Length: 321
Image 1: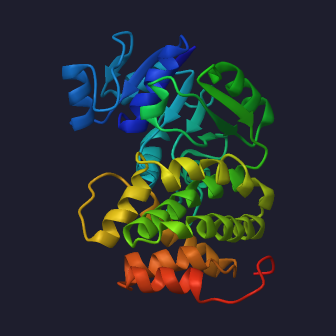
Image 2 (image 1 turned 90 degrees about the horizontal axis):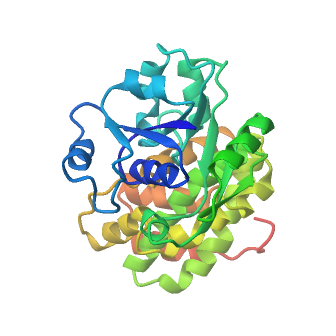
């Protein structure tokens, strides 16, 4: 199978590494002038992994699209619309598109499959690839379980057959809305977890997990998905990797924020926080944790005060709010 991976950052380079590992013919694309692509071309590696010389590195979008039967997109969530506007000039009708990023569009609150179809056309039926796992663990042979979902179940099953291995066991997704929102919002919970760590309130992570999943399940149901999806691999199943792992960018960002330290890696949860607050207003769903994180990041509220109010000073019935 010929696969093109668009995006050569941490996750994109891993996806190329992984698809090569399971014997596919892989091109890894990065935009012209990309520092990440230049490093990979010069050194054959980045800070996370070593790429096989079987993988072709290219800054030609024409070459990448022409090559791939499967086109995997792994860029920042907020950059998807811009890339999609470029892709609409290509003939994609015989291509299978997979979005391998976790986020919502900050300015609209839209899911990434919605963004992609708006720009490229409704004839495209993109799949998503979500769930727990860090590059650092996978390249050292530590397996995990993930989810592939698409509105077309036959495409879902075909992709699972082509991409599953001893390193990643895939489950079939049957709720695209829930899996997209769940995967995106777990990054916001990761930021909240990091803030608890930074404030010396790590003991409240259990409460964060219990309450966080409740509010996200309510949102998924309100938007039209199945609330039980929040308890699957896209959200709850990704909590260990996002709320506790030393590799989690979102957790590390939250911790650095509270401590007043600089953090220069991409934390997708920041923009997703704004999108979730927008959705909470549109669908009239209370999201107290997301709203609290928003007040810290965008309104300058004191993190410790917000976090303590969120978990320690609100008296209510546990399962009715």
